[in-house]
Each structure stands twice: as structure tokens, then as C-alpha cells.
Length: 226
Image (cartoon, rainbow, N blue to C red; front, top):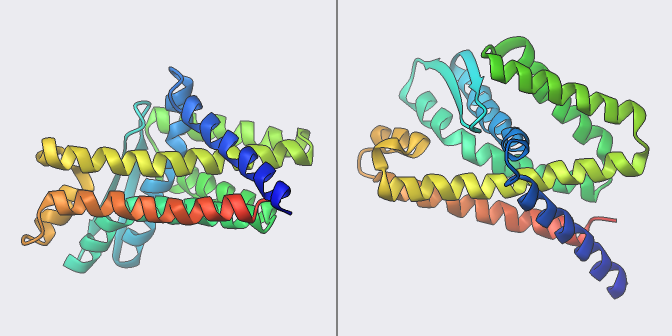
């Protein structure tokens, strides 16, 4: 049993290292990192729908994204601004939990729902549509042509990319909140909504929660992956 856990740990960390390397490859790295942008912006959109309206989402080749929404209440604006980084971290944990339980079909369904909702209702910019269509096409080809082992490994790689990006993007916003606070995106929005909590604290919060959820995801990946 000990040797099995060690072997699974090596496999998991191998995929984690692959995800780190892959996300830094020119052009291709930017393309695969958009998966985290999709999840992040979808988090904003889902919360915005509770008490407001989502106009559109834009996904860009530099891995940035924007959700254009309207909110009628202060509390709606607060939770919408809070949702992006939290949602990415929670979804990353969810993916590893599902992989640990071998619930690959559910994971596939979740990915297809994210892609479908954004393609049908929200994303309208050229690169965003290009990314959704090409990613969906590649994903569907994998489902129909790949064997189960390949599918499982691809899903593990996607989960690893999301984990890596949920932490690195939260780290980036934390650093931006200290050095360029007026460009700190969600952290700046929250600081404006709650004036007595500075933007830097929100940046630290986003990074801290990403580390916490990643730690939980690592535990699921190491000790539940079989």
C-alpha cells in the first residue's frame, strides 16, 4: 500500500510539473491557461445571475478575461467581485475530488456545461469564440476517439493546469495589489465596495484561499487517485 501511494504521488506530481511546463510554452501555454480564465469568469457570471444580468464575457489570448454584468444591489456587486478567484479554486478542488472518486463522466459533463453555456449565452469576442470552439472540438475528439486511459490522463492534466493557474493568477493579483493597486481588478473592486479593507488585504486573501484549496486538492490527488 505504501509503495502504491508513493507511485501515485509520483504520477500526480509528474502531471503537476507537466502542467507548469505546459503553461509556460509560448503560444500553447497561453492557450491552455485560458481554461482557468473560463472558470474564473464563469464564476463571476453565475453569481451575477442571482441578482443581476450578465451581458457578455470576453476571453483574450493574453489569458485575461472580463465579465460584463449589471447588479441592482451592493451585496450582489460584492459577491460577484468575490466569486472569480474563489470559484476557480473551488472548481480545482472539485475536479480532483471527482478524479479521486473516478467520477470521470461527471467531470466531463461539468467541462461541457462550462463550454456550452459560455458559447451559447455569453462569449462573443473573436478569440473567445475561437478558443471555445477549438477546445470543445479537441475535447470531443478525445472523448470519441481516445481510450479510457488517455481520457483519464487528459482530465488529470486539465485539473492540474487549473490548480496551477488558480494559484499563480491569485499570486499575480496579490502582487499587483501591492505594486499597482489601481490595476488590481477584483481586489480593487472589493476595496472600493468595502472602504475600510485595503486592496492589499483582498490580494492576500485571494492568494491565501487559492493555497488552501490547492492543498486540499493535492491531498485528493495524492491519496485518492487510483
